[in-house]
Length: 247
Image (cartoon, rainbow, N blue to C red; front, side):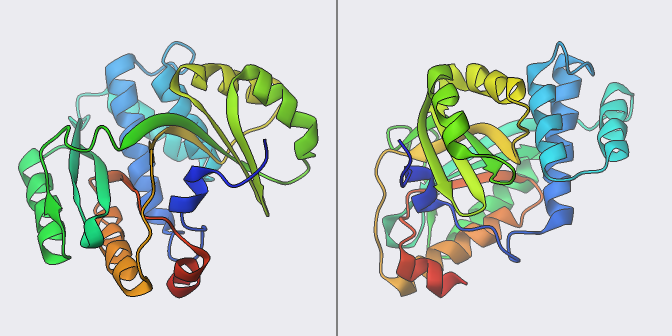
């Protein structure tokens, strides 16, 4: 079952360019705030908040930051965030799906449209890319102090579909309906993921030449740099040649 997952063909290696700690914290705090406002501040009875806190810990967010975000969400000064998504195409016909949390829809729509227009893309209508992506559970686990062979069968029994060991990380993929089971099994095994969540995985990936791929990744970088953007998904296959050119 170990091998090359589709998630790894579209996800760049974590590096200095992706380690924007401040922006990562901002996005996590938004998710904590929305989860706490919608489902209450008790993670025991609020699965979305529990997952957001789990991801905050995986990103090494200080405990006081987490508690402050939950407390603020329960108060009168809570920001009124809403979910909004965008679908479109980047250079080379690469499909791009953008998930946002925003307190100002007009600002977000304007910024996302401008990013696509300025970087060789075009926005489509919502639902236009639904056939290209499938939501799956993705867990990223640090490969430290763990023997992957010792946990692989347990996770398969819990519903894992793919189990990939790649250097210092283990990536586990499961169907959306098995997300809770796999998450619980990791907790039972005493393993805390760096990141866990429902991601949009392309049913098929597309290869491009290096120059066009760089233009796609420039668009994705611009989108990810926007404070309102939580996640950006695409179907560009990150070949070894492209990965080397992006380093």
